[in-house]
Amino acid sequence: MSDKLIDIPSAARLRLDGTALVHNWRTLDAMSGNASAGAAIKANGYGLGAAEVVQQLQSAGCRDFYVANWQEAKEIETYIGTDSSVSVLNGVRAEDMPFAITSSAKPVLNSMEQVQRWRNIGRSCDIMINSGMNRLGINAEDLPAFDWNTLDIDIVMSHLASADQDGPQNIDQLDQFVGALQHVSGKRVSLSNSAGIALGQAYHFDCTRPGLSLYGGKQRPEFSQSIRQVAFPEAQILQVRALRAGDKVGYNAKYVATRDHSIAILALGYADGYLRGFSGKGIFLKDQRALPVLGRVSMDLIAIDISNAPDLLESDWVTAEYDLPTASGQSGLSQYELITGLGNRYTRCWA
Ligand SMILES: *Cc1c(COP(=O)(O)O)cnc(C)c1O
Image (tube, rainbow, N blue to C red; front, side, top):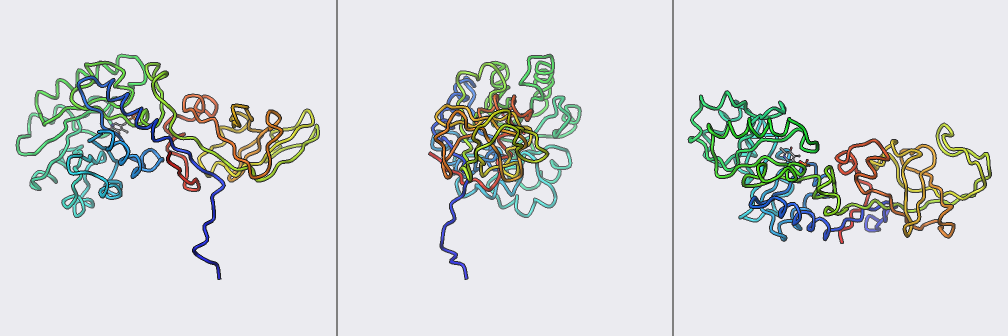
């Protein structure tokens, strides 16, 4: 019988820099001007761990948190102080009501059906306005027919579809939103996600809702100097081997050695969110020496060239290059996919 008390250390870990997380929130809060920055912590804090993220940001002064659904609200409720707010972005379905009416989190009402569902509950809510993204939200033309004073509305919000680019859609959405605000009011108004914060004061209103940039995402040049990397995937070397010119590596022999050199096999793969887009493109690092990925990324294993670090041995650790814009360029994945896809086999280590 196995001893359930014996710890089996993981061969992959996610080093998480809490100082950088707090720095990023403070930077986004300052960039938000008179508005206060909240934090989107949906999808388990973009994969890094919602409980840790909430605790660190709340200590830093963040008070408004955004999750996708009620399961996520429930997972963090014990960490939420009485002066903080949690908004459930996906709104409230009939199935959510038994939990929602007992929860200290509030729904973001996205449709008139949801408004009808919540109007007699007598508890706080937020309202999402569709300003042209046509995802979730109440259309501006449906606003005048309802008496919004019958609801206890905290935040009236909308969401920007293209804030990462400078184009006409941002100002269009701002205009639509400002028009809609003539028909519905709450305690606070909010429009901007991370990228929207960089669009300037007209987009700030009372509170902003950054997500990606808290976790190191830099989708606009305004963030390139100020936002810091938070998540550093690290993997242990399972085997070192010497290749001869002509030797093939990995599935379908996508790498063939053109010279004699050493490689290392890492305990990491696409099941850990290090997807196949990094095949032949990703870089690992040891003391700033670059160790390129060779051939295909497998489910649980990756081969890297260790010519630049011949001292590496079995059981040593290396770090993936995971600065989000850089890794996005290498892999063709979005910065969002890169951060939210980091799987459950990592030990998450906050420092
Ligand atoms: C995810 C989300 C955010 C955060 O967006 P980022 O681009 O990650 O900063 C803000 N508001 C809403 C409604 C969202 O769905």
